Image (cartoon, rainbow, N blue to C red; front, side):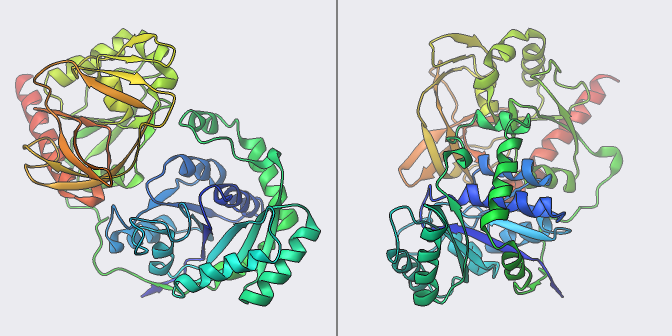
Length: 469
């Protein structure tokens, strides 16, 4: 059985060409028309999905063909786009940039082909006229299987500049030029930084989104874009699906407490959904607002986020820090990623040199840097049995952080060995019931991680209840 999923991919000729600006402008404009819009982001990025979610009111999802199998990526798209009248998929880097220079693996182009999704190519035409047609022609010819359906130009000097470029591209490439955005610092997205996400969630960027919507309404043929999206081929349902609820005994569903607030807010939606589908109940709480680890917790999940943005508040709440330390050292199965990893360390030194005491359950210190320390895909391989993985098992994810972590004991126990394009190195911390690291793991890359964690949570729950008599 096939399904209709109106969709477009917003692809760019390169990073910084204006994909995010245009994506948000289109989302905001179609939302103003009353459409239900669903956002997606190619690759593991989670700053852009925060923007998408703020504009559309629906959780944006990552589509990734390196971390996930093609079938799983398609399933995530079909699930996420259900009920939406338009899905907008923001690409990553340039259209053909992915895992390596010799193929389209892991690129926006690969996702567009797998989803049979029309591509709108974004071209920066600053200082270009007829030459813009040569740029577009090159993208058409590199892989003709990519369904490039139209072009939108950015950084136009004015309508006359746009018309000149439009004529050249349409004559030489046979593609419609669907509109333009002007040269204007007023509609530029602020420089990407983790601290922007709390600002997005507080609604501080709403005026910018409204401005973007108006620019799209003024300069882009929204009706033609919607027609292209609506005419996208129907997609076949998948015979085998990962995201299906498993039969579980409701009396034995462990409770996993999930730290969720401005300081800890990056979770792949699919990670949380798999936990629930495989038999857990999730209980969200806010360490930043002074909420300790809930008493009923049988497991603890501390995701990525921005503890450095709220380091004074987090350091000042001894009650919350003590609850984390007491529960984890008491045997609570706990998994922490990136920001959560930092929070469980002994301290965080900010960029001004001030040291702030953290939970202290991990014998290491963290120091913030004024530059990006790590970015990119990671494949992890466990070197010993631990909470989520057995010795030799692998999973995939990514790193993105501005800090370094330094172990403070000689017997520090790394969680796994990571492989990236820069080589292999040991990463994270694993000891008994605790697993933590900078790598954001995607549970769908190895669903056995979920089963193993839930088994540990059930065993902890049984021991806790037995001890209480």
